[in-house]
Each structure stands twice: as structure tokens, then as C-alpha cells.
Image 1: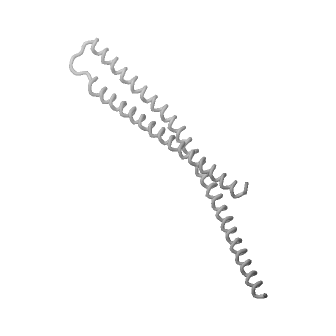
Image 2 (image 1 turned 90 degrees about the horizontal axis):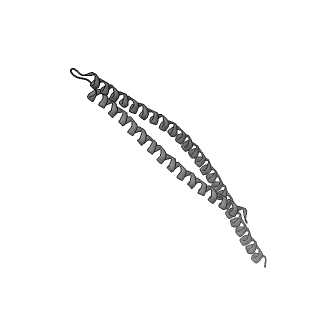
Length: 153
């Protein structure tokens, strides 16, 4: 196989790898979007629970011990739910950081592959240009020899 054909095949492989990296980057971006959406849902749930605690669980007027205990229990349940949501947010932040790291790694790899691909394409372009110039020079030389040969006859 000619070196230029091998290089063309190699460039094709680089292009394929670059496309695969772009697909991986798109997948990571979708994962990041999903994580952000989940985190926003948890933040909204925490805000809703705090608002609910502030509005509905505030005692008004004379209350009996049983009613106070139920209210304290509901408040404890609300605080527990808030703590659970905060824990979920912390886990999502860890996943987000891992996903961002994976995305940045994929971006660097894709950029490297594209640089290599461009480098090889530019080299192939120079080689083709050089071959065309040599071919043109040979054609011109052959023509001049023919003219000189016919002139000497």
C-alpha cells in the first residue's frame, strides 16, 4: 500500500475517533444537564418544605400537649426531608464533578485528535502539491526535449 493511501486511511481512523469523542462529549453534556435538572428539583423541594414549615407548622392560640407533640413531629419530619434532599444534592454534586472531569478529558482528547488529523491532512496536501509540481516539471521537460529533438532534425 502506498504511503499516501496509508496516511489517508490513518486520517480516516482519526476522523472516526474524533466523531466518537464528539458523541461521548454530547452524552456527557446530556448527563450534566440531567444532573443540573435534578439538583434544581431538590433545591425547589427544599424551598417548598421550608415554606411549608414556616407557614403551616407555626402554633397559634392555646394548644394541648398532644397537638404540640404532633407539630414537633411534623417539624422533625420536615427537617429530615430537607436533610435527605441536601444529601441527594451532595451526591449529585459529586456526580456532576465526575461528569465534568470526564467531559473535559473527552474535549481534550477530541481536540488532540483533530489537531493530529489537521496535521496529517496538511502534510498530505503538501505531498500532493509537491507531486503535482514534479509532474508538471517532468511534462515541461519532456515537451522541451521533444521540441529540441524536432528542431535538431
